[in-house]
Image 1 (cartoon, rainbow, N blue to C red):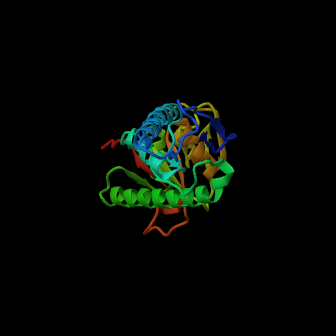
Image 2 (image 1 turned 45 degrees about the horizontal axis):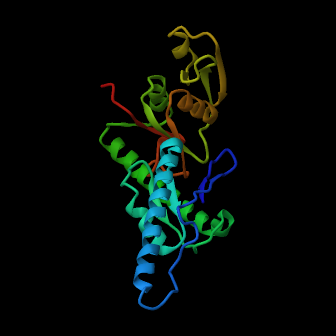
Length: 238
């Protein structure tokens, strides 16, 4: 069973039938036992190749951040042999038996997800601090981040769980164009301007410009962005 779990819709299930769906260690004995065992092992390998191919199809279609796998230890080992090293996603094994449903591993899933989110957030903040220290591919605080959003420079928007204080002007027809000062937008010919909650405007501008939005813990300026918002950039302009 392959489950695809989305943040905004019901989990989807694909059931993959192997060539021999009900296989295990043979209990037959006698002189022919090694031959039976080799046949069973080949079936495990063939089925693992089928499952791995389907996993890669799902990865290609859904572009997941995290792939979790649970089940029989040997089956997992064989499947992993057929999965290429792929930097697009993190891969993690969780405890489970041979016959599982999604609800059977929910506790393990929650633990794995919490660990992944914590590690990913830590790496993201380290990268942000490194780029900020080098004055390179980072924007720190309201004004620099808004400027970067207007130029479609932002790769990942970092925004605090506490949000961003105040209100910000933005263009209704082009939400990526946003600024604290209304005149900054009026000067470039935008007339359909409104003011809204700063957090909402930052998120809308990021989505409109094709940037990812990453929610981070509320941190001091030494460990996170000023004013609760910052960004990792795609490129520099100077």
